[in-house]
Length: 328
Ligand SMILES: Nc1ncnc2c1ncn2[C@@H]1O[C@H](COP(=O)(O)OP(=O)(O)O)[C@@H](O)[C@H]1O
Ligand SMILES: [Mg+2]
Image (tube, protein in one colour):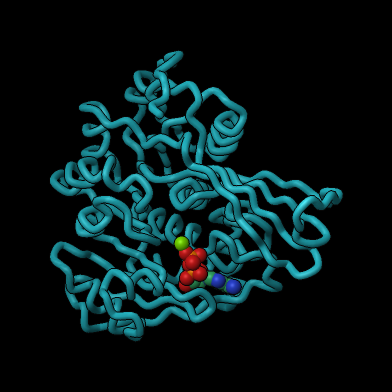
């Protein structure tokens, strides 16, 4: 059901005057409500809630938080509403220094919402989600201009069909596009082709290539060889990541995963990895440094629950690498 356009805020005009963003995000933000109970509910059962924690997540939302903490100037083209979940998202992202570019708000629109039931006795999770009130960013001539001016675009698969024109504009203007894709959505293949800095989890890389058991080295080499690609990277949780440059796709490097201490929660490791990579791109780090520091940032993220709380600041990342007897 289409949502009615409503109260207008003049944020777009205000932010248009700002210096162009280092990173312009276009993908999904989520709200995750973690409900911890003693055991999974059975039919007609009553039990007390042990804890309720609300956090923001989402591929692009969390990547921008990670990039902002590392010092990149981030803007986010997002459609939110006037409800509680939208306000929570707006407040959280703004508190992280992210410049929200909302072209008015849409009454009834809400971010993607997940209710995650956690069984305290086993740690098992069951997820119930809704996205029927989730709307893509609204793209017009002003937004296309922003795509041509941003340091880089950050995209994910969720709104691919709506944002593919932004990626085309950015690439035509010589701007890089960094992307995270976890599943196929309408026009995600086209958006992926426009993503010159492509970082995929191994499982999805195999799906994209139609090779269910291809080794990561071969997968990343195939992806790096695609036309227009600057860098491809494939991540595989604790097994680390592999990357190759488009100009030399046969030369694959492996980046082992860092260990920062006892893992509390690995949710969002990939999101933080992507955000740190994008920050490194606009801050001028070399390709190998982007991948190495992204791996270290993702490892630090595991020390705190949720997708975003553990994303390090630049100072924390530097200290961690120096303490790990690595260079920064
Ligand atoms: N348990 C972990 N400890 C340290 N680093 C991790 C851990 N899990 C993932 N990482 C880092 O984060 C990167 C991305 O994680 P991955 O699980 O592949 O992505 P996603 O979260 O998208 O599924 C990995 O390549 C690795 O560098
Ligand atoms: Mg991921």
